[in-house]
Image 1 (cartoon, rainbow, N blue to C red):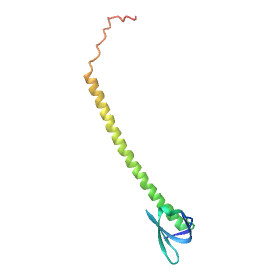
Image 2 (cartoon, rainbow, N blue to C red):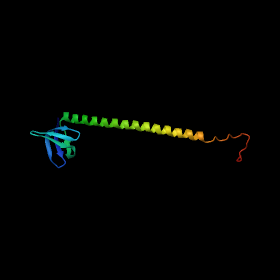
Image 3 (cartoon, rainbow, N blue to C red):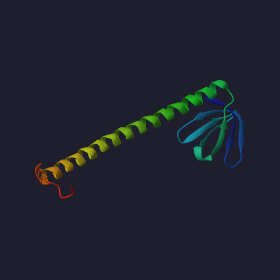
Length: 116
């Protein structure tokens, strides 16, 4: 559990000096006599003043950020592979186009250019 100085809800209600258990879809608030599970959409702000709690929430946020970076890296690698496939396809088209087109006749060095 993380110690929160205050938890503000979107309806204006404020919990002070409570323990919080953050979750993916809800926030569990533990106070003196009750435990409340509130959806994330209803939470406006959570202020952590306890140094250990603040460190823990930063660590949690960094872990989520690293997950996003890994997903972005995987997406970029997939795009790179797709780009390589497209480049290979374009190269094959150019090779086929060059093979189908007749070669330019060689110019004879004895033939004079009409522009000379």
